[in-house]
Every structure is written in C-alpha cells, then in structure tokens.
Image 1 (cartoon, rainbow, N blue to C red):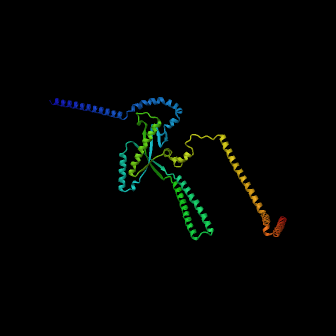
Image 2: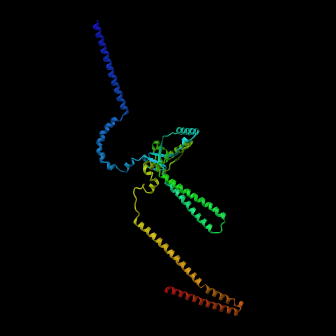
Image 3: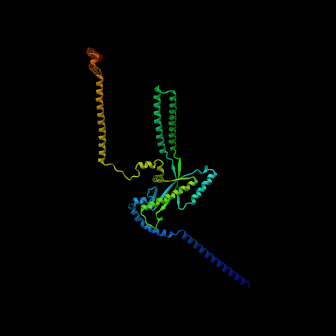
Length: 415
C-alpha cells in the first residue's frame, strides 16, 4: 500500500505541474498577442511604409531624372508658407486660407499691485472664455534698429542748429546797431542761450542713440495673435476668388476687433497689422540675420523685390539729354539778354551823369529865356552870358585836369 500511495502522489504532482506549465504557455501566448495588437494599433502605417519602400526604390531613378524638370517656380513656392499679402491679410494655399495678425502690446505684470494682477488675470480668463475659434500666438524677438530714429533726431538737430545760427546773426546785428536797449539785448541773449542749450542737448541725444545702436544685444519682443479663415467654411455655395476674399476680410476683421476689445479688459492694447507691417513681419521671420543690418525699407528701395531690371530706351535717353541742353542754353540766353539790357540802361545812366552839368546849364538857359519878361531882357541876356562863361571856364579846368592826369601817367610809365 505504501508503494501504491507514493506512485499515486507522484502521478498527481506530474499532472499538476503539466497543467501549470500549459497554463503558463497559454498566458505567454496571450501576452505576446496583446503586445502585437498594441503595436499594430500604434503604428497602423507600418505595413504601408514597408510596402512603399519598394515602390520608392523603384521610382527613385525616375525622380532623379526629373529633378531638373520639376525645379521651377511652382516647386519653390511650395516651400513657402504664404502665397501673397493683400488687404491686410496673408493668403495661403492658393486662396484657400487667409490669415490676419493682431499685434499686442505687453504689460509689465511683475510691477503691478495685487489688485492689478487680479484684474489682468480675470480679463485674460474672460478673453479665453469668449474665444469661439482657434488662434495662434506668435512671439518674435527683434534686434532694435535705431537707424530711422537717428535720422529723425539728426534732422531735428539740423533745424535747431539753423535756427541758432540765424538767432546768433541777428543778435550780432542788434549789438552793432544802437537802436536796441540793454534790456532788449539781454532778453534776446536769454532766448539765444536757451536755443544753444537745446542744440547741445540734441547732439548728446544723437551720440547716445548711436552708441546704443552699436549694442546688438538690445532686443525687443513683439507679440502677435494670428486668426485664420478657411474657404471651406462655406461649402454649400460656390463663390469666386473675389467674393471669398471679401468674406475672409469681413470675418477676420470682425474677429480681430472683438479680440482687441476683449484684450483691453486686461490692459493689453492691440492693432491689426497692415499689409506693409505683415511684409515686415514675414521678412524678419525669413531673414533674421539680415534684417538686423538691412531692414525691409532698404530692401524695397534697393529693388530686391524685382526679378530683373531693364535700361531705358536709347532714344528716350537722347531726348532727355537734348531737353536738358535746350534748357541750359535757354537759361544762358535769358541771362545774356538781361545783362545786355542792364548794360544799356547803365550806360545811359552814366552818360546822363557825365553830362549833368551841361544839362543843368541848358535847362537854366531855357528857364531864363522863358522868364525873360519877368526878370528883364537885359538881366536875362547877362545871365545867359554868365552861364556860357562858366561853361567855358569849366571846360578849361576839365582840360587841365586831363592834361595833368596824362602827365602823371607818362611819368609813372617812364619810371
């Protein structure tokens, strides 16, 4: 009986171990199946990628052959995120998507009081609760370009300097003349001193701004909210491109204005970017390094937006040159004619001045002759003779003067 019991127990143990081993194998198989299923769910395109690999290998040679043919303007534009900028909107995907950008002025949250911070937070919560459409928040860091500010400062300083020079000239004239009292001079000197101090202050501002512009680490952050509109939002009706653009502008403008009003509750001011400002935004985004030294205004003036330029027609250049020659010759002829008329009038005046004594004597003789009945015939005759005598004496004295002058000239020449 003892042997039989021991065999029975061993058989039972073997059966139990076999069952446990079988259960373990089943559990392992189930676990492997679950893992495989999970991987298939997470990577549904794995098989497609594997199948596409072979097709890509087959088409690689064909693609390499057609690289030169497909490298055109259209393929380059595919890399761009926008097609064009018009009506204060960025047009994307061939007019299927429109963007409008709102620039926001940030607030210094850390310097606010607790009540102000709470008001800003509540206003921002209200802004988030009123959103019924998706938005994008874009932050752009720019190096501060002070070139335009420096140019404006220099122009203002030049105006102040010109005014100071005029006042200085006027003050010197006032001192030279004796028509102004000391009180008036002191008052004008006070205004002149104020103008000089303003000029020196302006020059200091220009120098400080120029030194500041050399520091490229001075940065400025700009905050933007981007609102989008899709042409597929109205699939029931078919509209042309003009109607879609008008609807996009109306929809985006309404959303932007509503957003600006909501943001004002948390002390944030905003404005819709114009087309020029949108171009500058994109230019800085795509040309971050170049924009620090070569702004959008310079790029536009340099004609970088033109694909090519042509020289003017030869005959147009010739006509312009001839027009300029005609203008110059006309000006010269006008000046010569005016000078000629002036010289005639001047010569006539000089002749009149030289013969003034003779004209005076003749006029006196005429006056005496006309009043002969009043002064008497004898008196008139004697007066006329006296005038003729003074005329002869004057001619003799003039002749002596001329001879003396000639003699002096001869002595000077001989010496």
